[in-house]
Length: 390
Image (cartoon, rainbow, N blue to C red; front, side, top):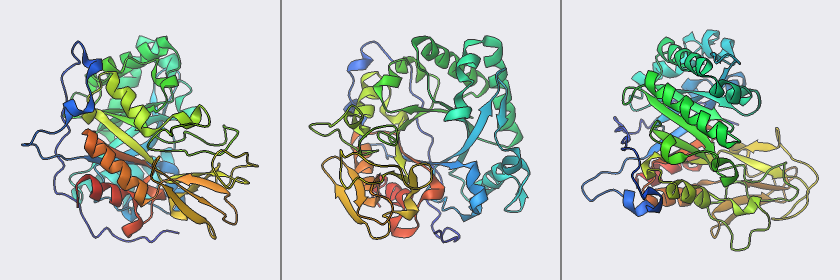
């Protein structure tokens, strides 16, 4: 499935830090992306970030096997949080003890690679789906627990020589939780001051979740928002659909089909978020709808592992790959086992990267690097090259 080779391209020697803008001003909600476009004297440098889930070490994909020369930030996923606010490693053996690349644990294996890739930031992501986020609401409501969250997160940053923390609370679901989320970010920023440390937060793309958060205030405490522009459709909907379309179709067939990368970015900008603080997410996996052969069809079940196939496994054997440039989505149909599978390929990533540069956004990120292909079919490499017009 994977060809484990040492990266032959090291990327740029230095990635300039993304700007840390001033707090929003009155009327910020009316600003458009053009207000944040680079001036003629600026050299646009875009982030090209990637998550690494710690369980992939058990698939023989240690950090040394990854092509990191195209990567500005590695988000190591996940640490979790206890009810009292203590942030802890979700797999202490894999994260800090297992022999990996001549050191102890995957975290140290990543940070030792910063000597080879000086542009790369290594950031610990806290949360994720399911158990990873189940205690966030309770912790964020309690100032003592938030204090413990911040201090224990900073302790892990110091212990493993990391560059910062990513908050992946999935997701604040009430107005009060939105307020508490901002309080949590503010306390983290206190113990992780900019520009020495990076503080980011991953958020869903749908307004149904974002409406609970005052993004204009939240942006004062973070360097980047990781906007999860994927999982628009999946086994939780009753008909097949695009899971990461760039544009909303003229006639969406469902509420899920009305969400797109464009609708998410438009919402963030309308709330006064600085364009350079927005990283648009790319899925390196496909959502499967077995039994469907086209968009908006009923299906029998989901194929792959937990309803998804790694991008490196796509298109499926015997399937026909189709790119819909109108909405910016790829899918394959007619394969032996996948039915209708929705994903991104290099053509749609190129389309999305151009969307990012045209709006002057901060860049792209990928979930996740270990599911990517290599060479000319790599999503990360395509994104990097398109963002920087290489």
